[in-house]
Image (tube, rainbow, N blue to C red; front, side, top):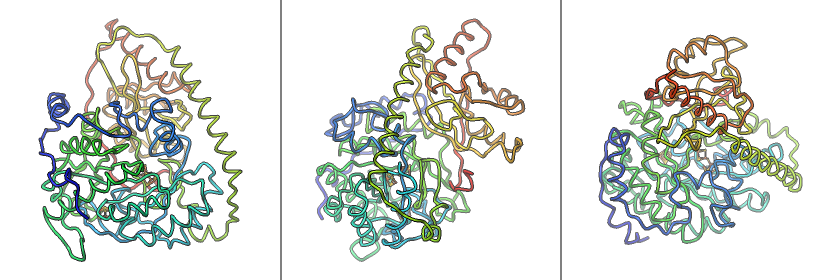
Length: 531
Ligand code: CLF
Ligand code: SF4
């Protein structure tokens, strides 16, 4: 298929160093250089409205598509679950961050291997999960290879599910090489959500990420391979936009390879109608056996990732709650219940797919969600007023087990949520996975340094409860452990803590100091790690 005109002349590349991004100087130059028109379905200029917006921010038909999709709506991911079925083993390209022994790391962490399924087994599994977890609303095919490199298996699974489980949203993830060829088939099965992994819009950058692709029955290498991949990705995205399919773009941030370049990717995909852009950190370690892992290519730090995400504000809306889940993940984002649904366990289950029961359960979830949202707004209205906004912003880490509240013990946290707090708002900006501190009823002091490293860029950590030992260690590291807001809504707690923090600075009791960087945990997300 011929590429569109827009894709035959890739935009020129302007390079900006990460250090410059942090100071903001290069950002304004990049913003000026970026194309301003859009024609997008989702861009309103806010940094993350596509992922955290509500019905007032978008047309009703878009809201209907995203409101219970845990990846497309930040708020929905606290209430609704997704599952993946690993029916697509083959791949038609090679990424330097991938080892074929493991799952496709475009959409999942390397280091865990999924149980591969036939379409019939996959459908059986989906019906079993849907009857056990009525808030499971989305079925995705995300590997373990590329979903469109095994089109027969992928579409047979979707075909059966569209018939047998009509209330489940269908979602597909692809590297985009074969996408234009299958857009019509995607529409035929009402697949409303498609993720394309786009790591570059400049084939010279692409050649550093993709050693080869398999195209028209032969292997193509180097810049030519990256050029073909780029053209197919852009064309596929434009075709999906034209047909009203919501697209999410995943980009793997590879320091020194495509970091600054992702700002251009963000602008390019917004111009072609992408709904959401998910910039994910490269997970890279020698034991994964990937080209990057074996050659010492590191992943980004937490601040490097945030700097690139922040620099993309004003472009395509950003997703910041991705958990880089595995190709057979089951459950809420950030939890992995796949072990409960292995093939042998499914055989023993009594599967009753009851549409009415699922609907009434989801109606209750929706009532709870609205009640929670209203309670949060009411609580926020009472929040302590601060002085005039002088632009000060800090990060706080929050221990929560759900409900939008500070309600988790420090020792039980496997993942902190991180909020950026200013005098007027507390915005969710990401999460940090950590090793469990409390093991078998006792604090594991060896874990503390790694937990501190994971939230080292935060000024405070809000928890329901915390022991004396971790409290002291956090204080020594310059992070305030705060347990006085136990049970409160996160945003209100964060704003109230910040008002008090600023008051203490004003009284001369403490001095405001910039924090350092934090590390992103490198490793597979598995049920064992989360347990
Ligand atoms: Fe799966 Fe992906 Fe669909 Fe979501 S995951 S195919 S869009 S249903 Fe979600 Fe997981 Fe991140 Fe993917 S958190 S890795 S973005
Ligand atoms: Fe691996 Fe996915 Fe890349 Fe294919 S598209 S090489 S499976 S990361």
